[in-house]
Length: 250
Length: 324
Image 1 (cartoon, rainbow over the protein chains, first blue to last red):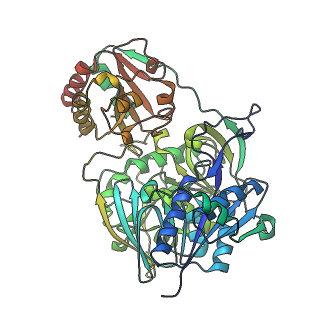
Image 2: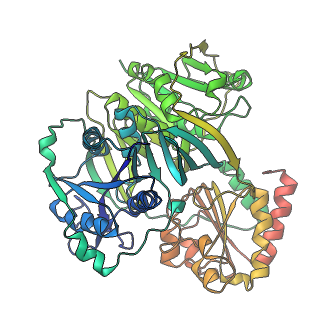
Image 3: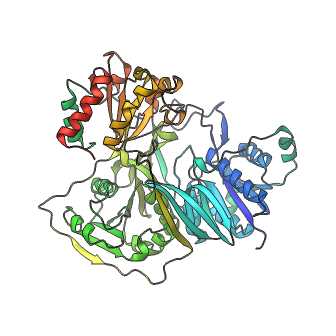
């Protein structure tokens, strides 16, 4: 088998432990002094790529991100985790999944990876679209919500966490994989690796250089979710069952 | 010209119709963009179509019935309907693992943005959806000139029901191309053996707090969970007390869930717990303490002892012949 490269895509997001708040004028999410991290599902994607490389089934792991200049901090930590090189596509504005998929598709055409692995969704916009969109542009098979991955002879077998259980699919490479929580537990970064990561190649490219002009959703408003209101106090179990049945939830 | 296509949840030819499909139809009706077609994909679909005919307001049932579509992968689905969707201003899929796999792939193919997990329809191009695990809502607008492609957040919608008076819509069998993609192959499906759904995706969750008093007592929830085909959850207090394992914890530091029905037994309702269930469809609270904060967010509250209420509930479900 020819030496295989893996492309991992990662996004800088508000850390999962942060309780997000709207800005006072409600035009966005308060970001001052908020801890930022690599999207946890993308960390899982990199961990899986590294394990594949460590088993000798891939030769190089490239990590790419589309994000603001500050996202260098996230891509450096992914290099410290073990990625061989990084590509940082810089932009000052929010990008949409379709745009990121197009950027990744260009990178795929340059790099020629056997696998692209990315998180099932980013924990900020919760879209879950970039992976399948990339697979569509690339016209390659996809497996989303993957909790187990096995490579053999130009194919990958993936176990997917679907609504009714675990589905196994087999894909001919190259293919796109999106990761679910149970795929692995990402390794911790060791201090010496942080130092070493500074020497690893990190290529920066302007997002505008990709010349994309794609239709985008506009966000007209950010709102706090509605407060729930107290409902009815019931007197009996029989009444409760009847009410729930009437609502169609039983 | 507006027209709407609902892509039905993939299911084998068995009845009843998947609730996910019926909820997606509810969203299509709310949008109300032109005539409404449904695309059915699968194999041996006749029994299903017999039921589908009783749905009101459908112009056509487009049927892709082929053994190769028993467990369709996303690339096959995209190849199958990739051209068809271009005839529509709106394409909707349920927010199931199937819809979330297929719809963004279609969007990538069509070159249009997609709206994931729609929880409210404001007008045919404006929708409300959740960000940050539902901690923020956003109103998004699909630009003019591209089709609206969306998935439906199932917990936010109620299924349409069949109407006896419905005019049967036309059924059109569609040709399934001979050259479907073969580079993704379905190998197998291992259905959840425990038969109890996963907490994160369960439609119903029964949850317990510290009032259970012991791990043995906490197991009382199991009978109810089995009866309702529900997942079991727990408050942090119950987890800390060792009544339930970590992965059942619901709340800010546990799982954030949005089941259609959440039943909290002996849970007082700390703010961290409520964050985890804010998007639940219907919340039921059972607590001895009439002042418990959980009652402030519960749709239905019952003041009582959970050790009496749970057995009574099981008996009443049995008596009314509900669930299972």
